[in-house]
Length: 119
Image 1 (cartoon, one colour):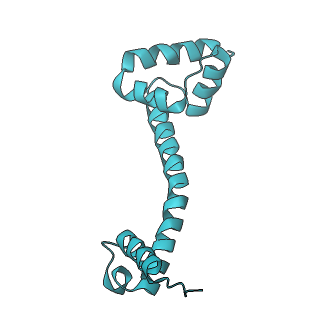
Image 2 (cartoon, rainbow, N blue to C red):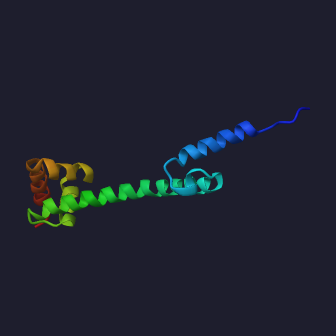
Image 3 (spheres, helix red, strand yellow):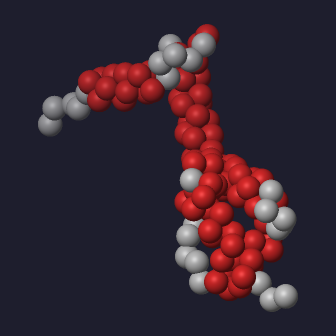
């Protein structure tokens, strides 16, 4: 039985790995062992930061809503409680966008939330 030589597949693997490490500095871009470590670490950072990105955007939306609501004399938590009681089913992303770009429409939402709050 003939011997199987794996040089072609190994070279393909190495080439794919070095393509992923393109743009890195030093030996991280051209040495297989170091590049593999760098690419694996970059993948870990990318996985983690996809979650962190969602967290950061939610915090930004909350800050924007809070700023718009405080101008009307409410706190963020009071406003969100009023929104729940009024049955308004808008998420924070949409409300933050309304607060930034459509002040009049957001003012109506604030009014509904205020009316729904117990005196």
